[in-house]
Image (cartoon, rainbow, N blue to C red; front, top):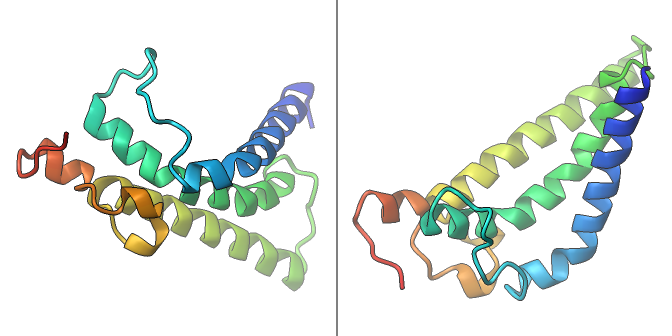
Length: 133
């Protein structure tokens, strides 16, 4: 493992932990109320991003489990090791897919913060089918 890989792993791990600490505020829609100045992708995309953040935070944990394999720290070819890697990778991929669904379609509603469930999905807004104020 190189120093760059180590730094990347630590940064990702710290990011996931810090994001998890913010999860209650994000779920109550108390965080991210204002579109930050650095956001370049429009208000519909920002609302979609904010709706998807809780799923992204939760999906970060199985991603952390993949890092030891990605950085070559676990080289075991045992059945348990392979099952662990495949499970963590599957959970991460499913989590990313759910993030996309929440952002684009505001679905599944159970994964959307309650105060944001009435919003139209990003795709609905962009296609002009729904104007959000």
